[in-house]
Image (cartoon, rainbow, N blue to C red; front, side, top):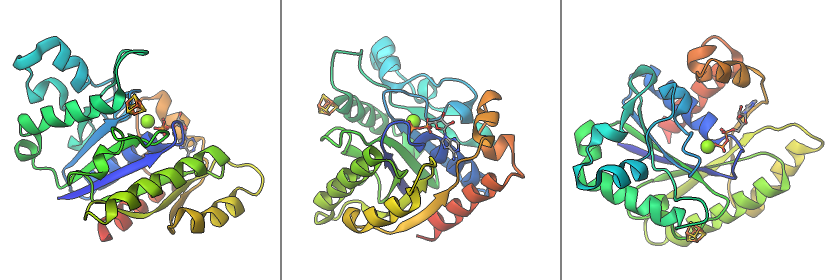
Length: 247
Ligand code: ADP
Ligand code: SF4
Ligand code: MG
């Protein structure tokens, strides 16, 4: 089983890339489980075509009566969709929520039950505190990818995420496989990303252009792989899927 974590600043395109990567992997005949670890809980929205009930909400509601089928929903091409969820705004800790949700999934034998070939964790990387770093530890993810544009704040987040990965590396946990450049346009963007790579301590793994086909497909509540399977961007996501599996 391949275990991948996708990190990056909020709004940078983690869920778009994760969902299309999952869809592209499913086209290759792989069983994929995508786990959204962002209080926004919209990681799998375009795979499932609707908002998936979060582990934390279901747990609050059903307590010990919680079952896997309450929060594991099948989306496009059989991709298994899970959303950790988040705390009530202003109360609680999102990181603790991730820990609680992971423990609950373990207790219910989620991985053993569904036996996915690939698990993708889509994780908010603005604050790489102990909670949001959980997917990097305890054997959850093995390969980490950071998504960034050329914007200063997203490169700053990328640097912090890389530092967090390095902190755990010596203990045999996840390793950083590269930076995925999701273009937002703007002056000198490519140059800024290339200059930042050395400081972040990684290589450029893949580059995605900004493409309005993403929004066109979102209107139909679909990933690009599903909504525009013959588009150039769909093929870029497929290329990412191929490269990720080769790692
Ligand atoms: P995150 O999960 O990092 O918060 P999202 O995946 O939700 O970010 O992306 C934020 C917005 O950026 C989405 O509304 C999506 O339409 C847009 N987006 C992402 N990637 C692209 C792209 N390659 N081209 C055009 N729009 C994109
Ligand atoms: Fe929890 Fe991290 Fe937020 Fe602190 S920064 S409250 S540890 S999620
Ligand atoms: Mg997201």
